[in-house]
Amino acid sequence: MTDRTDTYIFDGNTSRRGYRMNKMFMSLRTASARERFHDDEAAYCDAFGLTPEQKKAVVERDWQAMLDLGGSIFYVYKLAMMDGKSMQYLGGVFTGMTEEEFVAALRAGGRVDG
Amino acid sequence: MAEVIWGLATSHVPSIGAAMDRGKTADPYWKPLFDGYQPAREWMAEHTPDIALVIYNDHANGVDLDIVPTFAIGTAERYQVADEGFGRRPVPDVIGSPELSLHLVESLVDDGFDLTVFQELDVDHGLTVPLSIYCPDPGEAWPCQVVPLLVNVIQYPQPTAARCYALGQAIGRAIAAFPTDDKIAVFGTGGMSHQLAGARAGYINPTFDKWFLEAIQTDPAALAALSREDFIRQAGSEGIELIMWLIMRGAMNDAIGRVHETYHVPASNTAAALALFDNRVPQPA
Image (cartoon, rainbow over all chains, first blue to last red; front, side, top):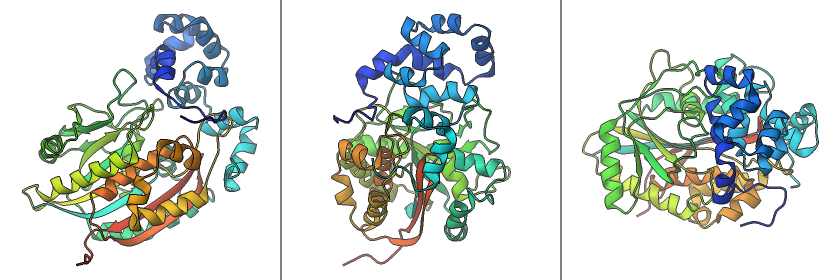
């Protein structure tokens, strides 16, 4: 629907591609699930049926790859929160900035030239 | 009959709730935003509704991607505050109004809006943050009953802005036919411009936001004409949440009075705004 390459459109096909991984992220809302994830991340991913590429992205915390493989930012954020990472940290990852630089850019009024 | 007394358009950024929950509202980062809320809070405290209809979206807390209802409504007596992964917000559970919910379901289905019905629903920051913006210190219980109305703004295709505005108009008709003397507030939540993911993350468009803030009162039809692509280009991929403001606007009278507004960048990754409208103003003949 848009030709922008700097913007993810979470459409039906993306949602199908990321379905298992997003369900795994959603499960991390409970403390017991987070413990099981911590114990063996790869096995936890396998239990949810992630593809090898998705599992690798999760275990390596490759946030960009998680989005490319069908992750919804609202679901990916569950894993980031578990790691103690903020949405500003993720914003920095996606834009090639440190978290501090990203926060400063927002405090200066946001990236208004996009 | 029941009456819509005011409408509140407000961002629902989770960190706004966290700032309140952690006593950080006087910190330099947050103070301008909370100072901006104050006149609206004082006015709302003097004009208390019996029921709040809160139009919001869930963020992977009460609903997952198994089922993606375009429009949905809660019909429960009580809604538990969701644990979003870091414990529940220290705010009261939400007490519903099953009577109004069921009236709305029937009226809206008869009017051509086939809503999904939730008999059980955990409500996340999309609903509780706007309630906290209305009422920062609820104590043991929120000061009104709440009906949650959910909109899919996360997975394409989201409903069109025009459909949201038309749904709001149908809600307005339904409330006007609700046979009680309840006073009702309508909350349209989300926005303003923001984008969380991709190389364009951090995008903010104050020009668009200020136009939208004005037009939501004076020219909602112009906003209803915006396409999904317009929203994503001009307000960022998550700025499309603003379609929910149009449901609120549709439920209100043609002429509404602007009580207060505030606009602040940033709340986390988002341009945050509040606009409060009085529905009980003289109407043009």
